[in-house]
Image (cartoon, rainbow, N blue to C red; front, side, top):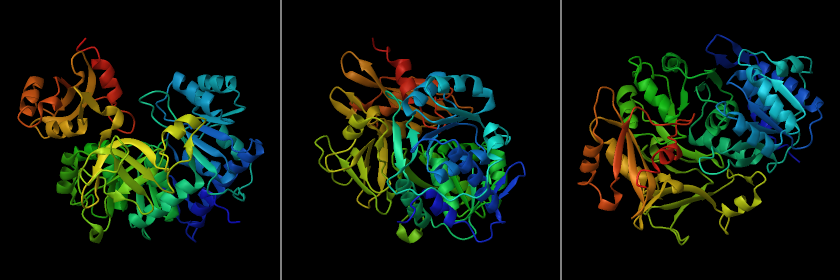
Length: 508
């Protein structure tokens, strides 16, 4: 029986020359492929020596570093389940995750050891190690004494590899269970779809507690035997300075916006890049167009989720179609995507409805939530993404919003993304967010929150008045507020739940 451990597949793709550079850091440290092989073996041997139970979870809340990536790879190698935690999570959240996942090992930064270890030990976790971004900590101290030889644990495609907790903007966070097969199948599909080739170099500027940076970016580079230029934290000037040495860049929209604010970004800086990829949050058409104008490159936007990794992508190759701003492209090979109405029937091209998907990349279910898992899948096995969208006659998918963001006003469905599109095109508007709040007459109405471009002044009442000539009356927000900035999570998504809470008492 073949070993379907994801690590074994990644390791098999290492180049023949193990002394070539695999990872280059911004502060001048270089790691060879041999370093990756030896370090993951030593950490894996440490995990095995702890005699963790079968299927043990390894919960990790540390700053981004190459060693944090090595810990992830070593966890796969040893056959355990990796559980990355956002570095922004505080005490109550960590209590919930550790209580829910019951990890056998927790790894945190030295500065958080006091309170994290207390939570972990109280929850029954047996081991707590530290790992800091400067290559110090008890994890590395303990691993240093272990053998640098290790045979990867034998795993089947259906065995659990990672649990990713969803951001939990509504209700409790759910742990999405991803298997070795989910992760490997998706990485292999993307290798072909995005044209990974010999000599590619990835500029890695994303956090690694999330699908985008941890799975899509790292698996992509490793499966191609490609070097990574590693940024522990994103700085637009540093990133632009590194672009000429890279051929692939993956970012969230915020990173593109921040680089566009730098005069150094031009066609020369981007001269060697083969593809710029964006995801994790919607890319404004203005950013899409501005990037094309400044760099000569058309950003490739794609769509995925914690539960499914990548689902769709705009075409990489010109013969497969154009890259269309505002869309997330076509379903990936092997992925099924359909748009259904309230009755569950598939809708025609161009009609807006609920997006459902299926494929080898779709997760196994939610950790210890069998009822929730059952609820989120249809009788015929499609996963309900919770996203609302449409597919046009050419097959391009467009995400209109989350179903929980849908506003039902006086019985009519109002899609915030449609209204935001109109507001964002108005002079002086940088960005907008439309949310639904309770209303005594209509049940719910829209409220717009907008930010102005630098040096511009906006008037909320004028924005509402301008919309009245463009949209049906039931879609018009009842109020419009101008603010300095919109609240965002670490991946750059606007936190609409915070906006809803802030304005829920507006109409009594």
